[in-house]
Image 1 (cartoon, rainbow, N blue to C red):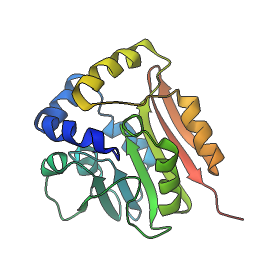
Image 2 (image 1 turned 180 degrees about the vertical axis):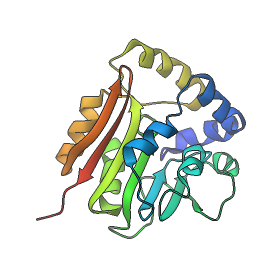
Image 3 (image 1 turned 180 degrees about the horizontal axis):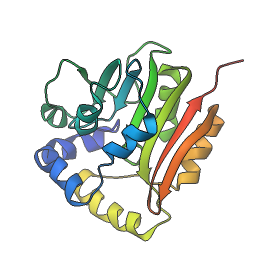
Image 4 (image 1 turned 90 degrees about the horizontal axis):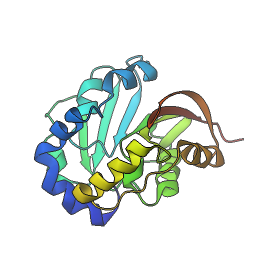
Length: 199
């Protein structure tokens, strides 16, 4: 599912109860994500590693066009079919989209599933237009609850790569992004960074 071949099979095994798992542990933040994005109805949005499409389904109709990318056939089979969601089975490290294609890239509950996180953010930078935004929702390994989640997730999904929030932000900064918004609630955080126009 998440740009690492070793985790595709586990996600294909758990897709039927993935949404239930996310609800039980209160991991979905779709309303807060929508509020922070403040979509105007015209944006071109890509939901990278969008899985079962729970977030995409919530956001559909709020933007101009929406693309959902995931590597797991099982997860994608759970996406509610909609004319407003364009679904692609692709690698999030190599999406195949043209340069400067999107206004917004969403990485919700994705980064810690990808070993090559810098490569993931570089792909985001490539497909985002100048002044485009990347939203990241993930979990800070500096907190005990995230460390406990790591133990559990690795038994369900395979190897995971949690980082401190500041490490993720430093990678974004090194790639020429600037921070515009964010919220941190202990072990989890949502950050929005803007791609600066190349000089």
